[in-house]
Image (cartoon, rainbow, N blue to C red):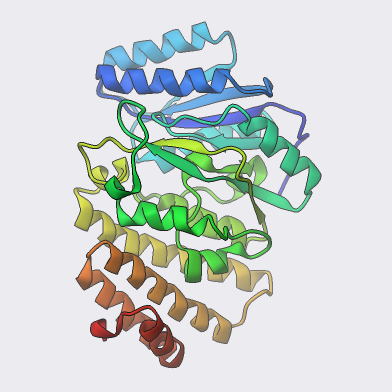
Length: 335
């Protein structure tokens, strides 16, 4: 993995696809205005536009490039294959320009003013760190705080994990077996060489979880900071994040999540084995624990069929470990 001079510009990466609504433009403007407040001014913005159907939206992106005077570049793509695809194209450009690290932020979220400064400091002070992430606050479409009671159980689960956030070497094992999906994309920064070597998969849901597991399994260490919480926007007229809408609703989203999460675990196991950090017995133990953890998430979201499927998969890899965890987690009714 190639490393670049950490004093170079941090690259904010924003996937973009717009039908031209006033709300979408308003949210993007708010996202960009928050970036302007960075205490470390050495940054650039890369927007990957997945062939937005709105000509007005594309014209607005061109105006932004002019307004930002060289600090914002739009990468126009021929088609949209989801936010992961857009991020990958921006990462390729960042790698060519030798920008040292990527700062992910979605087009409707609000980054913390200290984010570049804190991430750069962690990367400099901890040469083994490859990924830096933080916690978040949930806001609605108008930027107002959203209470836990109005959040999906998956969001609550992520926030709960931040009381003991996975960090250090091989954090992927704790993420997939205990914590669950813990770092939102809009809270995550990564060294550009890692992001370029391990692109997001061609999926439109849970593509970030897949990537984080693979970042870690390839050898990158994770570092958590509570200092730079992102404001994560979840409009209250929809359930959960935009990825749920893209996948055709809640249940369809969770079907895709189970499939992509499992694929991410398998790819992480492959990468860890390649490093000599894992044998097949330990890999099967991890698989069993992962499926029980996934069952817990599905159960909390009232996706009983998926939870049962995960329990069955867990028992295939190590029935002893699975049955013990199933009982501990209160999932015995699913056996």
